[in-house]
Amino acid sequence: MDSGEETRYGVSIRPRTEVEAFVIGLEEFAGRRLRYRTEIGELMELAWTSGRQQVFADVAFFAKFMTKAMSVMGRIGREAEGYDKVANEFRDTSEKVLTLLRTLVKDTDEEVKQRFLQQFLAPQPETLPRLFALLAELAWVKNWQVDGKLLPWEKQ
Image 1: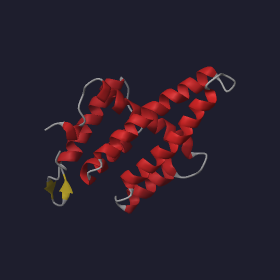
Image 2: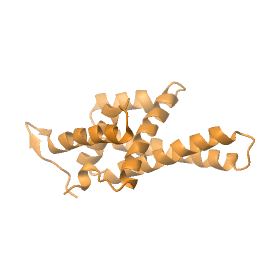
Image 3: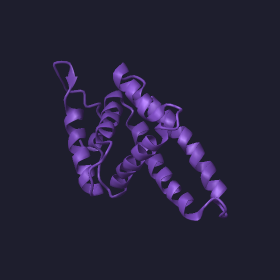
Image 4: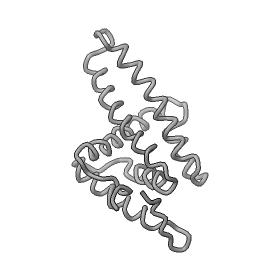
């Protein structure tokens, strides 16, 4: 897979254009406008241009797992058999996702990196709802793939 490094005036064109089209298609697929459409697009573009497409794919996979796990934990309640096992997996996966997201944004410009860190990755209670909302939307990327659709960098 190529990195998609077509540039004009020093700015990568192909990934941005194809990612924007993908996000529009993802919203149609999800049947709703995504709250974090810009951030999803930025993460995809960062993954594509840095050669970290697998990191993005892993985030989408874990996002789907975490979204399902949150639903199961809410449905069965803390006292149910198996809750602790799901909760432990959820915690472990959360740590993986945070590491993967930090990996995606680590080499970008400082403004984007700080925005992601402050909005989603800071160890503060107010970031958790935003992080979980972003992950719920990233789960749609995995649903897209499960449906047999390609990510922008997979189209050659």
